Image (cartoon, rainbow, N blue to C red; front, side, top):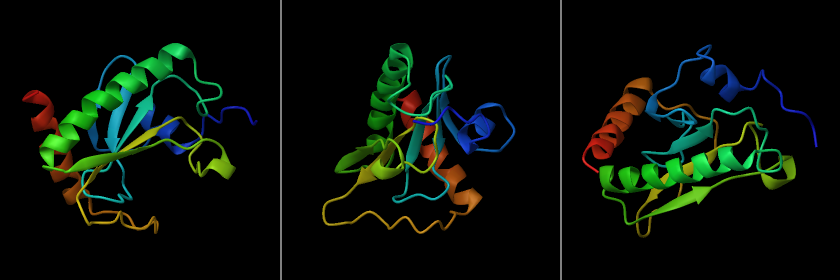
Length: 142
């Protein structure tokens, strides 16, 4: 397994070097809108700890990510009145990981509606901002 690369896009976001649409932040985690969402309301939960994936993540980072994922799951489901959620986490290239900083995908789902393909198409910033606001409002009401 390769070493953690501090130049990955999520490390840059965590350092404030790249913009993101923040939905939630605490001392150990950051939740942001996925800029290439596979569903409206697609959120990413990141540990602030520098870890490549599940294989090198310290237990406390995994715990923090799990707790934030649960918190965001409730808010995303409520904000989008979703029927359910898909939660995904990928490890190493063979496992589908593209960005090598641990992260969890939280995607609202609806009966009979497939996820959009991962085409690399970026969503308009104003749409991401509106979706983030809906989720932040749901967090306040939870």
